[in-house]
Image (cartoon, rainbow, N blue to C red; front, side, top):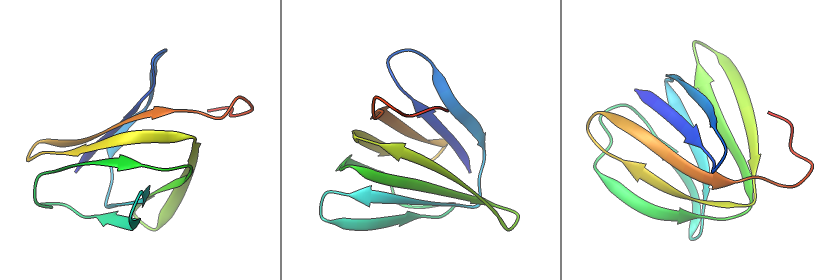
Length: 84
């Protein structure tokens, strides 16, 4: 599934990913390919993206998650000290 992580300044990440684990307001969310459409808020925490056994982490302050049939869009604000 295509995952895009975007903030106001730039696209932070855009690539095919096997699994996304996100800090939802109501608890941890795991998004896999063919997930049902979803829009929800994200809280401060780490986004974990897994692709072919490798993991990438992105720390966020908060965000909005949109899952649709074509892609997963994650609009985020980053901590002041974040370097991506």
